[in-house]
Amino acid sequence: MNIGIVRLGQVDVSVVSRVQENLETIFVDKKFTLISETCPLPKEAYSKSRKQYRSNIILNAVHGLAETNISLDCILGVAEVDLFVPRLNFVFGEAEHPGKTAVVSLYRLRPEFYKKPSNDDVLVERATKEAVHELGHTFGLKHCANPFCVMYFSSSVFETDRKHTLFCNKCYQKIVSSNQGKNVEQ
Image 1: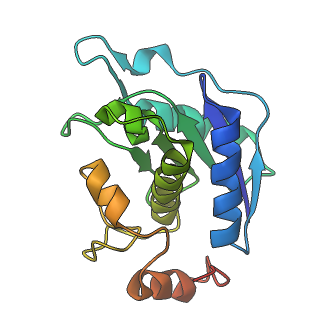
Image 2: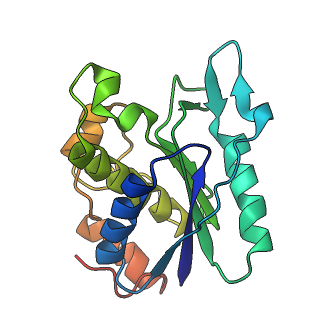
Image 3: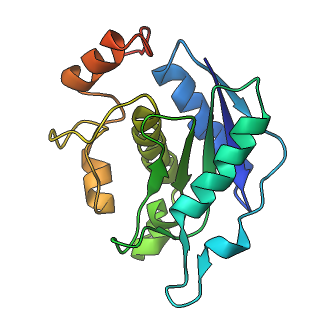
């Protein structure tokens, strides 16, 4: 399975490259390709009243990119903007369940957002967890009740920090039984 990673707007390529390296060690049977061109953020995704971007509109734009790139089975978009869905204050990401596209944002994963010193190691770890989580949705996984499983729904960065980068045994077995991730490293 080939998974593309695309930067959505202005995103630090070194952070995205490090997340890609982490994903390659977690999903050993999948090939990750960093798409060199960036994809612009859809202007219609921005909500002036909320000063945030609707993640589903960005997800649809990434889906369009996935449809035109037949060499990729899935595309993960990485943004640097604050994402939301109408029923929540914010989201770290969104994905088709199951599907071909997922989006994560670095905006609220940055320690600076929480008035902490900048730390790329913390950012990359958080971004990796959220990327694995959203890719898990594309593989058909739902949210998990285990607070340490990567598929646990994080409503705060503290929950993201608590969970692991890997699937719990229950979620891992669901991936294995669906024949979509036979060689996921645990």
